[in-house]
Length: 446
Image 1: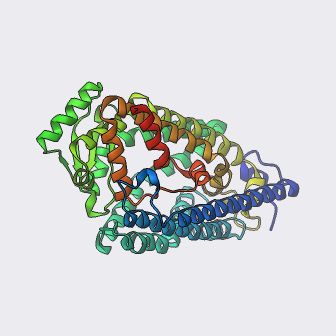
Image 2: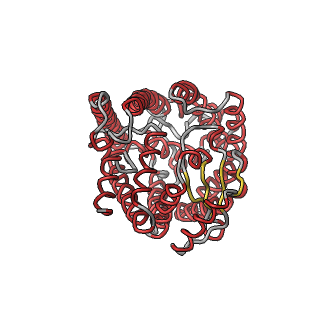
Image 3: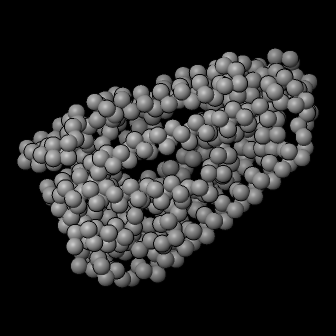
C-alpha cells in the first residue's frame, strides 16, 4: 500500500512510522485476545457454577421458590450464557473483518470511487457500516428472540410486530441519528483542533434533549401508555411519593406484555417531564404493598442522586472519549495499525485528500470496547452499590418484607438464577445477586 500524504490527516506526518503502526496492532491484538480469554473463562465459570447448583434450591429460598422454577432459571441462564459465547465469537470475527482483514478499508475505497471525497461519502460510509453490521447481527437477534426467549415463555412478539419495530427503529435512527452524525462530521472538519470539545457539547445537548422528548414522543411509537386507573393503587403510590418528596408528571401503565413476559417499572424523563411507568406484567404479578416497595426502590435512586451521578459520569467519560478521538483522528498509525489506509496515492486529487473523519469515528467505536472491557468491573461495582443504597431507602420508607417478597417474585418471573458464579457477578452484574441483596435487606430489617 502507498504511504499517506501529509495533508490527508491534518497534522499527520508524511509517512506512517512502521514501528508505531505495528506496535498499535500488537497492543490491539494482545488486548483482544486477553479479553476473549477472560470472557470465555468467566462464562465457563458461570455455566459450571449454575449447572452444579441446578438440582437443589438454595436453603435461603427453599420456602419461596419451587424446584421447577429454580431449574427453569438455571436453564435460562445457561442458554443465555452459551448464546453469549456465540455472540462474542461472532462479534470478534466481525471486528477483525472490519479492521485488520480490511473490510472497512475496502468499503471506504469503494465509496470513494463512487462518490469522491466529501460529506456525502462520509455519511454514506456510516450508513453502509450500520446497515451491514445490522444485517450481520440479524440472525443472532432473531435466534435470541424467537428461539431462546420463546423456549422459556418470555417472547410475546409475532414476527410481524418484530418487523414493525425494526422499521420504526430504523426510521427513527435515520431521522435522529443522521443529522447528528452529519453535524459531528462537519465539526470535525470545520471547527479546528478543538472540534472534539464542540462535538461533545452537541452530543451532550442531544442526550439531554432526548431525555425530555423520549417519554412523550418516542416511547409511544413502540408501546401504548395509559394512566394508572386502579384508584386504590394510585392513592398508595401518590401517598408514597408525597412522603418521599417526589413529584412526577403522571403514573402510567405500559403494555409490555405484547412483547415480553418480563416485568419491570421505571422512571423516565428529565426535570418536569419525569413520569412513572409500570409494566402491565408487573402490576399483574405484585400485590399493592410490593408495588409500593419496588417504586420506593426507584425513588431511592433519585434521592441518592444515582441518576444524576450516572449522567455526569457518562458525560465526563464521553468528554474523555471525544478528546482521545480528537488526538487519534490525526494519527496515521491509528488508521494503519487497524488495517485502514485513509487515502490512496494514484487516485484523483479530490479523493486522495478526502476527509478521514468518518473512518476515525468508526474505528474508534469498533476498538473502544476492546480497551474498555478491563475497567468495566469497576463500573459494575458502583452500580451494585447504588442498588444496595436504593434497597435500603425502600426498606426505610416501605415494608422490607414487601420488598423482599417483590424481588423474589421478580427473580422467579424473570427466571433470574439464584446461584450465579460470584466472580461472574463481580465482573458483569449491574445488580447484586439475590442472596446478597436479600441478606443485606434482612440485616437492615432485623
